[in-house]
Image (cartoon, rainbow, N blue to C red; front, side, top):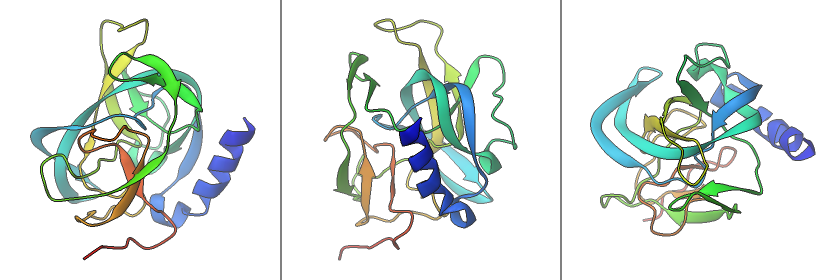
Length: 186
């Protein structure tokens, strides 16, 4: 709980940028270590259009941080669905086996090659898969590719981002630094 409180305090410093932050309790998808596959559709976030991606994410239970502006003002998800939210887990189920593994943060630089971007699944809706894998409930989560979770802006190639997804994961779920301006490498 202490780690969640510290995370919430840090995220609260960017409320003006990210939206209305809240702690939700219950089931949620944690996509922090997931890759994202383009759906060949578009998704609109606060009036801006982005390429849509789908990430398969484990469903966890407990406290998590949400941006209620993207969730119709409520932590409650429709039947058969969960929200993709964030919580500071030290370990949780991860692809491909969905065995519990340590959370490992890493940075990477976005590129314009296919799979070289990043994706944002934070506070977007997910469909719960009907069958568990390795005893883990999974969800298909849909969100924007190359959209910053902090300011609803496009994340261009050359930006340093962070994720918990392994090296080689395509369009990993993550984000650019919320407090520092995005730096584009030339």
